[in-house]
Amino acid sequence: MNIEQYPAHPGNFSKGREGVKVDRIVCHVTDGGFSGTLAWFADPACNTSAHFTIAMDGRIAQHVPLTDTAWHSGLWAMNLRSVGIEHEGQPSKGPWTPSALQLAASAELTTTLCRQFGIPADRQHLIGHNEVQPGRAARANCPGKTWPWDAYVRDVQARLTPSPPAHVPDALDKRALRLFDPETNTQIGTASLINGTDKAYLTPETLASLRKGK
Image 1 (cartoon, one colour):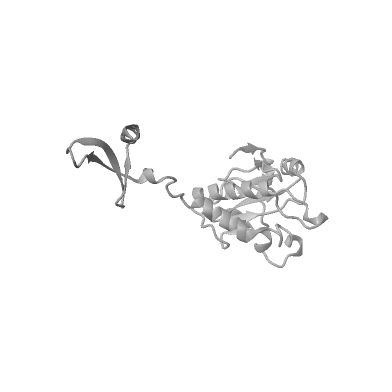
Image 2: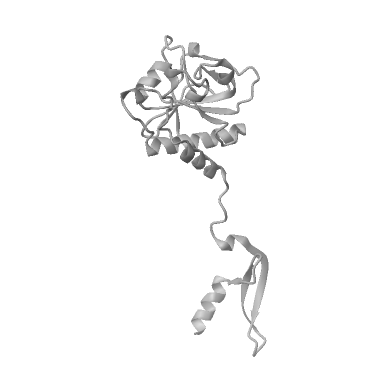
């Protein structure tokens, strides 16, 4: 995951987190373009910021260090305990949904943050800006009803779940079997047990030898 650095102006966020543990991720939509958002957070007149912005094409920009408090939620207590992620989009111009690349990049970033801070991947801890202070009309579309929460949370949960062994031989028992010809009582090859089963895999040398003898 490549994260580009576009620092916010120092006057648009607060240093530190006053000792508060990070346990929330707040999703936003910029209602503007990606480059315009980067420039706005760097402007001393902005008076707001987020930790990250994700473009429609999946690019990720970081504006505020994770150890510092971005001004993104409108509620100081939430700012202290959360990471704010903006997503490029303009819902004020009509129905908006994140692109596939943007959603995948956001899920990957959120997965990394959940691991880093020990944040549970559920709807109590992954929230929208509109949920911080429900009822405020100005935030109703941030990120709005079109944000695919169920699919988003499932994606993050799946990324957090370790993958099972991709191939059975990875679970081989370390004990080797010697294969004998029952008529001559001579060894004709070797094999490895498959852990927890009554099966064994022939070694490549034994398999080649037996095939050659056919």
